[in-house]
Image (cartoon, rainbow, N blue to C red; front, side):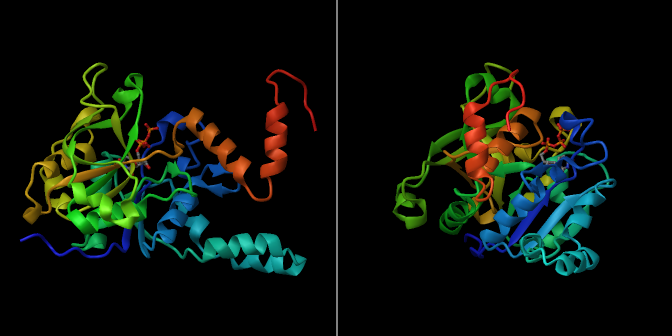
Amino acid sequence: MAPPRLPLTKAVIPAAGLGTRFLPASKAIPKEMLPLVDKPAIQWVLEEADAAGLSQRAVITAQGKDAMRDHFAPAPALDAALEAKGDSVRLEALSQLASLGEPTWIVQDHARGLGHAIGCAESFVDGEPFAVLLGDDLLDPHNPMLPAMAAVRARVGGTVLLLLEVPDSMTHLYGVVETAPAPADLGDDPHLAGLEIHRITRLQEKPAPGEAMSNLAVIGRYVLDPAVFDVLRSTAPGRGGEIQITDAIHTLASMDASEGGGVHGIVFRGSRYDTGDKLEYLKAVVQLAAKDPRLGSDFSAWLREFEPGAGHRP
Ligand code: UTP
């Protein structure tokens, strides 16, 4: 018999990586704390979890990344200073941050890979299905995908991935999937209408150029069955000597639904940025700034006229 289909309330947000691609900026400031307009990446991600109704949230952190905790901690002296100045705009921004509450903090002792980081959340997850949102992966906030992923989980159980079609030249940077048709009636669900959904039969972590099973790459949102924790315990270190979540999900894909197995994926057609990568970070800042209600029109007007190498224009 298939396990009961519990609603999703828990989110695990891995943010304990070394962030080497963003050095030296990420030496003392966690890459998840780099600002995207006026909020750090980790706040955008927690806001997405909150908007999806994931009311219990745990961030996987590491030694030296205390700036993330400080960001979510109350700051009564700052509130008092803004109140004294009558600065209602900034007070509102801080109250929006405070309304997220403080996540549970879980420390990963060493950066042993994303699979290991997720494994650190086993007691927090406590046997329920849960969502994973990578702390440096930004999805267009106007196009949330977690509700559709939860709807797939509710229909078919198991694990649900978010997939991005990438060019051949980029498959070696991602986990890549092999697909088979998903149950035909999934599209009857109003949450899933118009979405491309696949059953996933195998996964490869960062395949060598020319060896990828498809152009569908796994990106930083997952809905995982708690069966993943047993699988992770017996997953040997893979690529780069790290415990890879891709390898654990590959095992889940071959397991029976009665054991928490089965993997499906939804193809994402919106904007997504790996903010731990410098070029993608810059693109994310431009996109968010162009859509910002206060800055958007001035910034977009400036951008239209922008010429690299030209002098400063007010
Ligand atoms: P990345 O591979 O993007 O992070 O992991 P990284 O290892 O910090 O990156 P570079 O290559 O050194 O620049 C994706 C997510 O998983 C977290 C990261 O913080 C990031 O949010 N992660 C990764 C962990 O929490 N623990 C790990 O051991 C590895």
